[in-house]
Image (cartoon, rainbow, N blue to C red):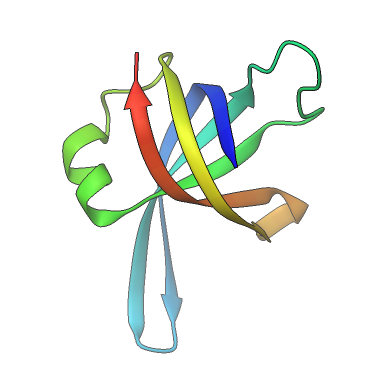
Amino acid sequence: MQANAQVINERLESYTGKRGKVEQHIVACLDLDGTHPFLNTFDYVLGEEEAKKHSGKIQGKKVQLGITAFEPAFGGRMRAKGQLLGVS
């Protein structure tokens, strides 16, 4: 699924997992679909390469996401995983 969204927040999330400390770069996104947008914002997890290239630089910008999976996250928020296809 491809989605156009606006990044409204960026944050670094860290927690202790089974194999030690885990750090993830998370962006909160607002769906920009004109006809059938999501009612709530959702989170997108930046991959390692995406985080190196875009972390701290995309807040307030529009992004195109190639979403391959949605998973429930902390607090009942939906978390998307996939690929960042473009930034404008």
